Length: 114
Image (tube, rainbow, N blue to C red; front, side, top):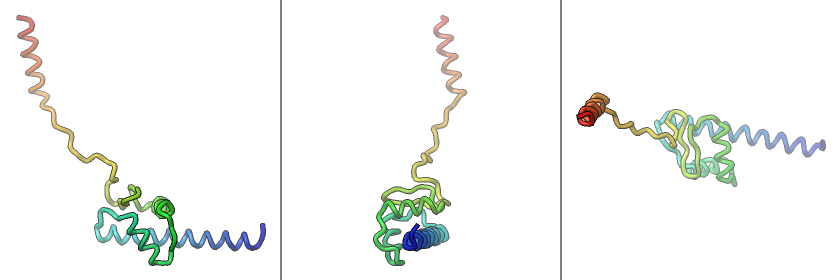
């Protein structure tokens, strides 16, 4: 391995570690402020302002995913870990009146046997 390859690898590792720490800091602040959703593009702009320029959307999403601080990530929004994932169905299932169903079936059975 050449010396410049070692230096480049160490530089990339420091960059990735710093990026990961910055993403964790930003999402932690969002969770502390009880922010439910973070715009992926807005996070990309915040990282750009903090010296992480020219990051693609995929690189930002990868950093967020590797941080472990998000429950859901897509091209438009990031859901922090302290919130439910954006792809969960939170609607209540309709309640079933078992007694009424049994009564209706009993009446059908009685009428059917007459």
